[in-house]
Length: 456
Image (cartoon, rainbow, N blue to C red; front, side, top):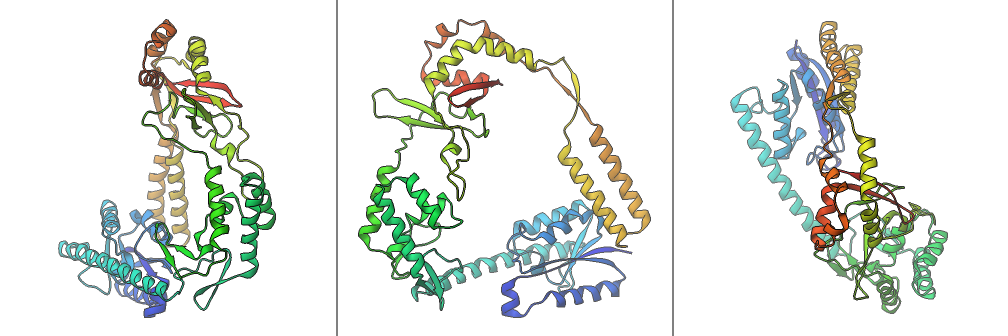
């Protein structure tokens, strides 16, 4: 007796426009399975588009268990996929697991035959073309709606309500925005003081929201298209006059720190990490003097938690690049010796391999196998055979050992015996950076001090 998976899908749009239903698909598939004497199991994605696999939980669950099925059934090919890449990936996965697929309402879609596989690829290509055409039609409809002043999204902007498919000013929220702008001007663009005001008057909103509100062009009647630098006039009503808005924009520009990007990175860019939150620290460069001043800071130490004055990290103190450089030059030999002694291992040391990810996957498969047996979807013999196979693989993963070769500290030992200042002094900035990149893995900083250095 063949054991098959029955897949059903319908998008919200298809339900509304064409009356497609999950129940109709289930009835057709169940009838087909009974007529052919198949043992079957349903996987259903309701209200989800076929354009992508990522959001289809039932489909992904079914495919993860495809090795236990003889065939995947669906009513029509467009229920499974309209994306060429996804469809071919599904087909390859099924082939690798000796499983075929068939559309019961389309006799020519059956990957158990050569002709069926050809038709399968052809129909998927045509379906993807239809998706592209549909996307173009939707863009045209949205453009037409915007020209009529109708909204194209259900997302509400702060300061507005949606009434009869159009934006309408929410007077209380609009006044709140105007008060925020006036307060920002009052404190001369002090963002910290403004944020204190913001969290008192805008509940459950964070720093990013405040930053966005202070730059929102919709408040002067200029609607910005999502992720595009295109602005539409006469589409959304203005909340404030231009003078108030642009006064705030000028203050924001003055408060922003100028970040000058250079073609040459600093000596330790990418090597310095925060010892508290373990994130890579950022470079800050001051070019006001003839001699460039480079410092490193933890980016999280300047970011506040949502709805709070508390920072994401307490590592506020910056560290100068010249201090890091001098510290390493003065102490590289002693740091390297200590690191070698701490991390040296015996040659060909045998340790257990970390297979935690693979072990978790096998354990999940065993649980799913048990569910299939308890639901009477597989017989005892099949369960026992598959369980023994999975359990054997699980034990192999748990007991797998690897030989860890001794770490090569030869380059590090050479550094210890060098006259470091003499050699380092004749290097260019680019050569100095290369020197550190070849031996150092990470430098951990906390409150302006170097806490740890790890080597490659």
